[in-house]
Image (cartoon, rainbow, N blue to C red; front, side):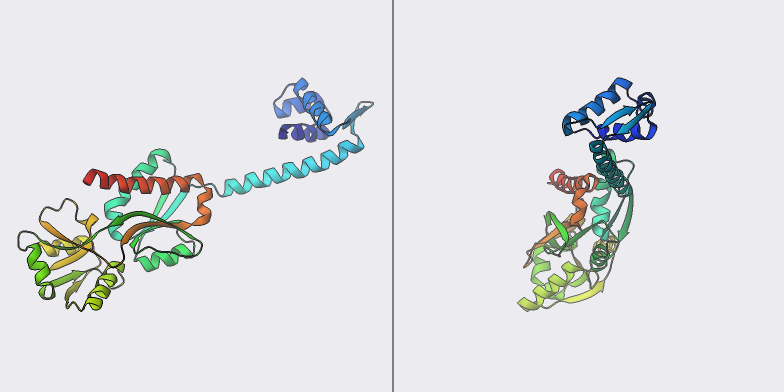
Length: 292
């Protein structure tokens, strides 16, 4: 049944005149009459009648009027709540390397469909990002870690990525790096970095000796130091694309690492957020297709 039938009934009872009701609702007078007739057909009997110059609800009409008003009030309340929750911004957090190598393409692709959306970006360590997501201070986070699982959080495995030892290809060789790994000064990411922790755990498990020369939070700084022969780095392969003077040796981790997109499960109800997930996954995988 059309809600306009209820709207016509309520407006007609308020104004007491078919002509004025038609003007207010933007219909012809005959359409308003048809709406009332439809209600009478549906509920089986007269709902409104004339007494002199006045329109009066019948006993059945009074019941229908009361429920029609409740239904329309609820519909208005629902519309108001939905308007409050309209998506006009996305709060996203990620780590520096993903922000540098992927985020621009994701946002540019998303803006084609949703140019009105404003992005707010936080670049933090992953443990801080996870805390902010759980506290609902962020809508999405993009992280690089082993497969994660958190109650109430939706996790999308976007792409498995290799981790590599990175060296200056002019000054060093694969065999030299591997055979003399314990002698190599290692340039590693910060102590809270998940893949640094995983590497050192693997070293401990296999009795591999190592020497950490420096810990740095910035991936590009690590790459510059490698090119200046300060040592060997350990980085995701996606951060090395296009660097011709950097050699890589892929390292097989005990557990694979993935770029993962995470959000609250409730966000899947919104088309804007669904599209952000799809565009993120398509964009990152499309970049890889063009690079292979």
